[in-house]
Image (cartoon, rainbow, N blue to C red):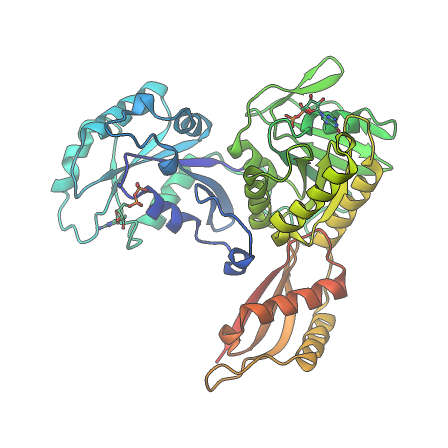
Length: 442
Ligand code: GDP
Ligand code: GDP
């Protein structure tokens, strides 16, 4: 499970600025899909091979005048509780504020590991301005400038030293390191009541499925290994499942952080949508996280049994509209309760995994690229015409295609989408995001 860093502080100290700087690692292409709602309050930060989930509590605060920390929305407290490390931001230019004291008191009381970060410290010659913050009793004061990026990398390195070290390679996609027989890691994500626990129990009750002993629970996360038709899988829990007799039951309330951790830890995500509720904003958000994470995905429209024909048609249209940015994913209609549609769902999950792990030889990629360019050449921009020359595979799960050539920075978004469609078709990449990276030489 990826470690979680929460950014905490009163309004205007620079939390969202720091958040943007820490999480600015994802491909720009992704953000371009129409209809993708990005929730800016959760993201991932990278330091070398290590990855962290970053939560900006900024937007979650009660914005009412004089709202004190103790009364802050429960979500901030939940974010702190779920974090492995808190970055507590203060504003050196504004100086120590009463609210800072209150937040510090709270953090000391809950005993959460905290780094005190003095932001807006660009151009500060001496440490005198930092001195007053030692009063907060949280140890060293780390000066940064989120806006200018100064001290941010040092801060992340320091944070990394304090966080639990990864127990396994964080890139589940390590192309050749993966043992051939390693289980496919699956996460089931979705809103509360979408039917996640019912689906998991339907799976675990299947005759064809052999479950193994559950390993000891660590940090609230459980993994359920099992075999189906001779294939190994491992279920990564999002819902805080606990075994009650023979069945699993979700005992915790919905947690975005846990959902993100499970998505990041999985290779295939089943996004469960409650057909009786339609595609809600929260569903679109979760879909957005999955897309950003690059994991393979299958959309399971659950409770299909409860809809009449008219409602089914309505729902199809809303999926088409609201999940347009995920058109690459298979959409399966199921009833977890009546155990209907589970076979096709499994097949889609296996297919999505296979697509995510597809090997794309350089020769074939390059030939496809050249055919695409021949079919439709990129448009000239100014005096330069972009010239894609060759391509190679840069990774799996998600597949990454690296295109080399001249003036590729001039390629339009629509041309990139054309290329994406071209490659998707050729390699049958259903069910997985695809990243295209450009390496341009003048
Ligand atoms: P939040 O409310 O804590 O999320 O704060 P924001 O990130 O929205 O920042 C509040 C204001 O402080 C914005 O006007 C930022 O541009 C500014 N700000 C953020 N970081 C820095 C910094 O390092 N130096 C300076 N001078 N201003 C900053
Ligand atoms: P979770 O919060 O996502 O784990 O959702 P649960 O699995 O606890 O299901 C929430 C409610 O939806 C329960 O009352 C289930 O019985 C019901 N439910 C789950 N799957 C289906 C289904 O396929 N059809 C119908 N009609 N109800 C379902």
